[in-house]
Amino acid sequence: MLPKHSIKFKVEEEVTRDNVPIAIRVRDLMDKEVESIDAAESVAEAVSAMIRSKVWSLLVVTQGLPQGVVTERDVLRRCVNRGLPPDKVKVGAIMSSPLITIDPDATVREAMSLMVRKDVRRLYVVERGKVVGRLTQTRLFQSNFDLMLSLSGLTGAL
Image 1 (cartoon, rainbow, N blue to C red):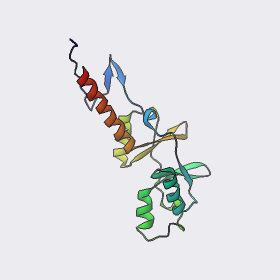
Image 2 (cartoon, helix red, strand yellow):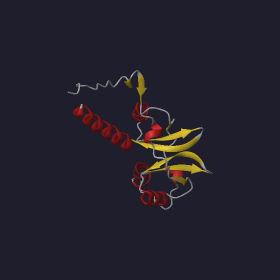
Image 3 (cartoon, helix red, strand yellow):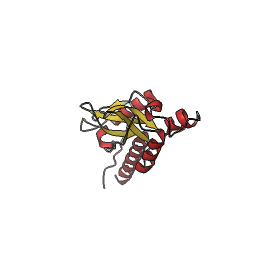
Image 4 (cartoon, rainbow, N blue to C red):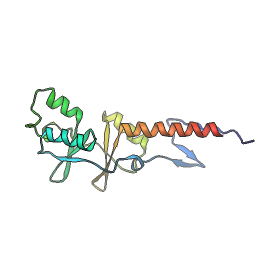
């Protein structure tokens, strides 16, 4: 007969195994493909790029350097809601700035905390001064849900 094990988690502490911290890092979950658009492009072009790429945010750049982010929310609130013509308004005029960033070696817990504190739905992952990825609330929720399902299956099998 197999011994019965229970796995207990505390929100305030990291999960450990044999006194070694187990933490999921931002780099493990981030999207490595980051779509971008030049700040001088029109909002209409940004919307087309979002639809083509199947994303709801674009990194806004000027001369290749990150300046901010434009999201579907920015388009709706700062352009459409004000009756501004999307083909005339520049992305740089409606983008959210500054860019909220995180280190790829930060924990998922740190990422979630930063999102809540800054009231954002996505973080851009920066390593050695370069954007290397993006982490969204949706991805965090999905990964946490998958982990819970896996753990529930594991504890049911023990």
